[in-house]
Length: 301
Ligand SMILES: C[S@@+](CC[C@H](N)C(=O)[O-])C[C@H]1O[C@@H](n2cnc3c(N)ncnc32)[C@H](O)[C@@H]1O
Image (cartoon, rainbow, N blue to C red; front, side, top):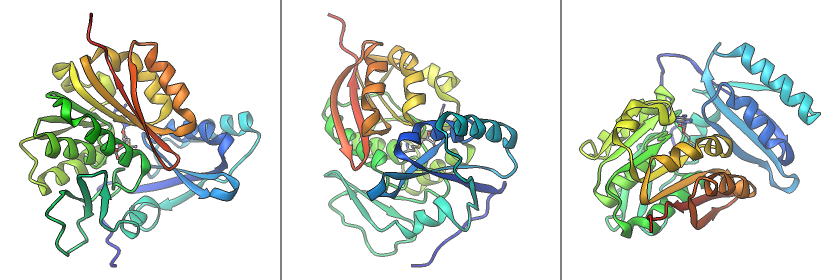
């Protein structure tokens, strides 16, 4: 398979550290101070060792990163080496293509990279995408869990849908294509919004999926469209907990939220934060080490 690479207006780099499981959260927070997305990948399953990776502009946030890592080192008592790689030659982008054969997810979805030129199966909903440096090629357990959760709640026919943290646009496109309803897709990373827009056009979903740049619940486009019947938030455990109040406020009664980006071990923390805001658990979907939670806002009695 040919490895495609792309040029970006700004040079991006992948930064990573390798840590034992008990320190994942501490270092996830440290990288998270400057990288909106921190990917967590199994490095050595026998010894429970994880690689945490984030993408950032070259030269951006160096002082904040150094301070955050110094704090993480002192809390954890370990000092993992910070590795840096050009995003174009290694890290996410390269791996996205290497590890990106056609993927069947749930009962309905097939996800395909733009590099595949054979004909997809006509019996599925096919999403052809190029995630580039955005997160969301379909290989990650958190994304897969969200698409399976979407199939689980599709019969409820949600009308007003938000994908908060859309990355490549994979969930927004999946919802638009499966439900034939409008979806607002928002991401804080400009390169993700760019990738999502291109993928939406590529899949002929321009009439259904609108992609915008925005920061969480503060985004004016989100405020204007709330309350939502369905919200996807595949972010990370800690930001999800912080967003619980806004999420509950902006969900319509009877509405569903699909939360992911959390390790199965982080379910209790995320669940408690959302139950405190009155949301109830419908189902947990586990994909490898990752969990997706379907929660609902009860109708008022
Ligand atoms: C784990 S990726 C999920 C991508 C895609 N939805 C999927 O399921 O594969 C999380 C995305 O959330 C975005 N994000 C993180 N914090 C955000 C915030 N406060 N507002 C909007 N997007 C955010 C990141 O930039 C990243 O693209």
